Length: 241
Image 1 (spheres, rainbow, N blue to C red):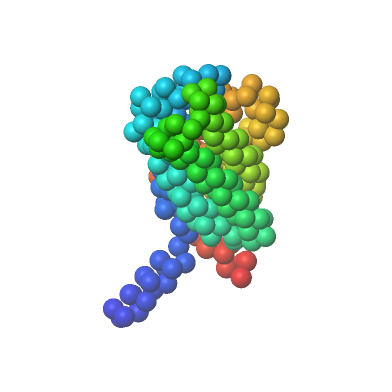
Image 2: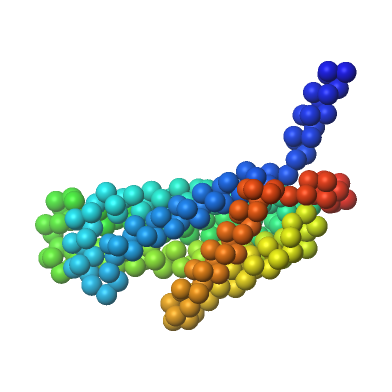
């Protein structure tokens, strides 16, 4: 009897949806992303290369910390992508797979964005670079790499916009999560898609950040606290086999 009970428990764990783990990683992604954004916001002045350079030199640890936060956030989102694929595969395997592939490309762009942030401290701290370029050129190079990081980040957010729309659709179609959460998540994705037009993305940025926080936060918090209706998830998983 004990052996049967252990076997049943092992089977249940193997077949259980990774909901709370996905929620935990999503919460970490949001916290790290916001942290990296706020740390960098206090340093980067997009219209002034000299001030940006001065801020990086004055707060090198803060600038590096923003890089670490963004990189860890990207790693956490890779975990979210894998867990969401497993979680939503019973709803529609093909859509879940396409969403995962789009998200991974977006994560790759996030890694590129982080890579660009490594260059300014090198330019400013290594004698060969600091001595070769005149101050104005050096400042311009620093700001160029910071802006290149921002462009890579924006590209990644466009991809995440498509990802959020697809995950919102899967959430809405699922029977194991509230439909309103799926709708909010898809709305967040539509907000990120405003970055397809840089002027519109810049204009809508405050609204986009708010809808993103509400939509993505609602799914992450729901999964972390409530999880999913396990029986309905397992029924869909069995039907999909």
